[in-house]
Image (tube, rainbow, N blue to C red; front, side):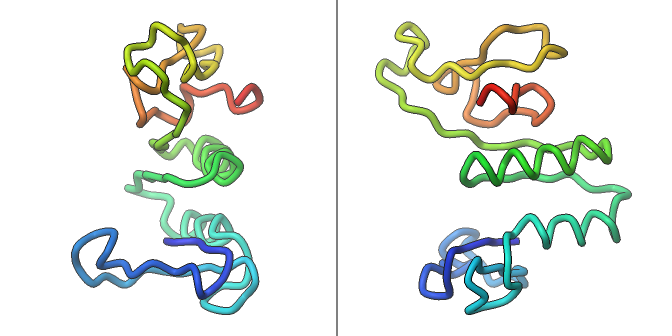
Length: 128
């Protein structure tokens, strides 16, 4: 699934994966594919295919939060790729610190050292 603001913003799946695939597309303005957020497509897919599914997501934090909420509610494994400003790349400056969820056993994660991919349930989405 791929979401964009408008049809003019759509990237070719070949640029992303190196091969042609059948991607479901959503555009916020409805100029191509589903009219609305890509999380609508995810919700529909998860309703039909909640069995042996793992979700991997990248994109803006509000979208990732919705993906995390949907997958955690259904107990579906989900990994998210998060971005942060990284000044030192070593974790010393703490510029890329993300607040961890209470059940992660941590206070913070550092995107530069421990990421950028995290399990959705490890992140404190309220504090992000």
